Length: 288
Image (cartoon, rainbow, N blue to C red; front, side, top):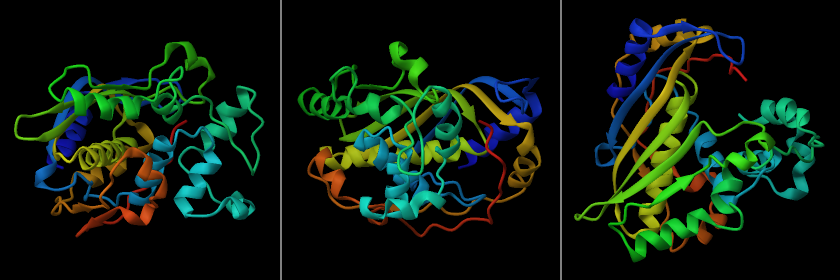
């Protein structure tokens, strides 16, 4: 994860001091790229702890196509619908968006349902009736060397109905002659301290799931940034993180999946980071 730490250091030293939508203030730099070879290990940040269960549950929620934050809470805490009232005390990384922007949009959110509008999962699984995930898998199978293997969340027509417009906007997949599936993701807005380690792990996991289904080996994950920023309420945490030496990367262990439909039978505990060790957690308040 040295590439990630180097980018943090670059932004601290060279970024612009700017205001932002949340009123928190940021140090910002535009236009960067980092790359991870998944054969070297799974790119989980080790200079602080990674909320792995949060990564897995959110991706399973996206792949389910849900727009309900309470459904994410179910997946995260592996609860049944019949126990939903027990989840009212549990929050997720999307709870504040549901309780604030979601309510502002007119969604009737409560302890049972917290609608977010047509966010990532909806776009992935039902963009105007098109299941982008199934189409992506079928297109890679039928034309592996094609240049149109795109997954997009930036549906301009529906942006105003989303509690949070997509930060990770789109990704492109590439099959090498050696049978490796690589992924490049473009992120228009990147919270480098809190969000980006989560985003790296999420897309590396998505890439690994798709490779698993397609019976390909995971290749490179390339993360391309637009506005890469460090919020001012996490500057001291970033400086602390930069004093820490990265640890060995873990290996991803997951079940064999025959199709994307099989993902509905998976739980968070089916995806394991074998050998994951990290430095202690570093916490900061999320700016929304």
